[in-house]
Image (cartoon, rainbow over all chains, first blue to last red; front, side, top):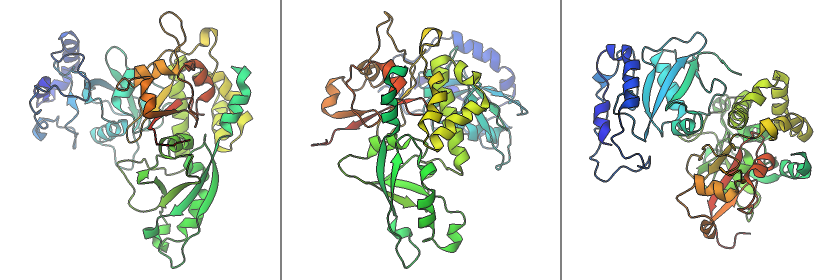
Length: 167
Length: 276
């Protein structure tokens, strides 16, 4: 996708503080990709996307955040990406950066692993993730599927916590 | 809803004869284990029914391996996902022409990329309840399931676990009510095809003019890369082991042919020559 090269996160934490501002911008900037592009098919004209953001570009708090999650950026609204809002529940720590852009085909188990690393949970500690503040999707559920069924206002809200929050 | 109770009963009573065989290369005793035969409820999950098979087969592992042996099942090279109902797995990969359904029991080389671990029966319960909640979020914005008491949730689960139709349905009927204010907002469905993750989207029981949607409408919407109904020349569409007419109203199917997890699981599989 043509927009992919611009999704590189900035190098400082200040980015996280400005995220809401950035998110609002995102909503108003028109998508440069054709909206009808099927999620799994890249337009023939698109050059090979740049591999992954360099490790140095990831925000410092992450141990090893996966490169495919990039902070939301104005150009990140292509049809293959989902805006995900991560919210803490219970006593879970607040993430400095709440809004992320995630590939539709990423699975929820991968997201919980990402959160676990981000909030520096010890490996034996669990991370529970919830959609709709009610149910915990199976780890092999695709983010895109959850967004299609439970997204609102152009984003998917995912709650995370260290103990079971809802049933 | 209640008028077709005998259909609910027939669906509930669906069974699949299964033969479990231990993977030959994993047998660590001189003596070979016998095959293990079981009539498995379609509505159940494999971890709920394989305790005895596990006890029999794990005796043929080396003592140190027995301690932490986690069983997983495979059919014809395909690892079987324990968190899908048994009937869905059979419709996807099995065939009524070759019964019993012969599954291979493994304890080694757990396919981490394809299967979830199942540490205990509580994991199955948690998965089951989460799926019921997800379905009700689609049907009633979660209001019915969230309005229930904890003991009702437990009764749904024990009904499935112990194969008790009346116990399960006395609670489940509240989730399946689709009249007046409670009419389903969307049909909780998953369309399964071999080797892919299921398709799940929002789809209303009726169109903009209030006309009932049918199975064909659903397939046209959710599986648009195939031409319906022409695709039936090369595909079979199975729900609870039967091939319903594509003109069957979708709401009726949701109410009567859903699995206990409250999802209508539709399997679209390649047609095999001379399939019965």
